[in-house]
Image (cartoon, rainbow, N blue to C red):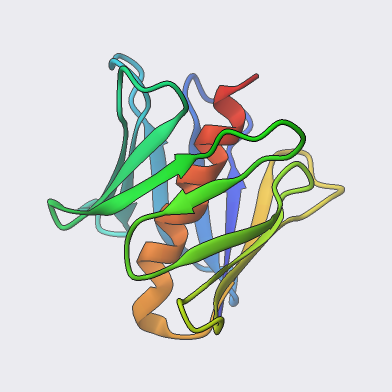
Length: 157
């Protein structure tokens, strides 16, 4: 199963549309304009909020809490390294590895089985990411994880 996260070109804040494999809109992602730290909300097609990503303030490196249905699932944190980007995920027993500067990375469970793979599509007018996941139950957590890593990567610019 696959989702495509496509950034809108004309927007004051980070705004994305999320499409499924049939090119149908599945989610809408919008960052709040006036907030302390990044607050990114994910809505379904009927306008109901299904998830939220909040940047934790007063941390040395970027850290984003992920909420689904008002409950905090966990956090994605940037780790300190000298030569490459590195992140940790503290929920579902997930681990992340890959080339974050090239925007190709994967998330695996504690047994090493692939949960989600994220890659940046090149030759697009705006940022476009392909998110491939194996189980439908991982769809929303995988999407929120990819958005949180994107926010942490873009926050350094």
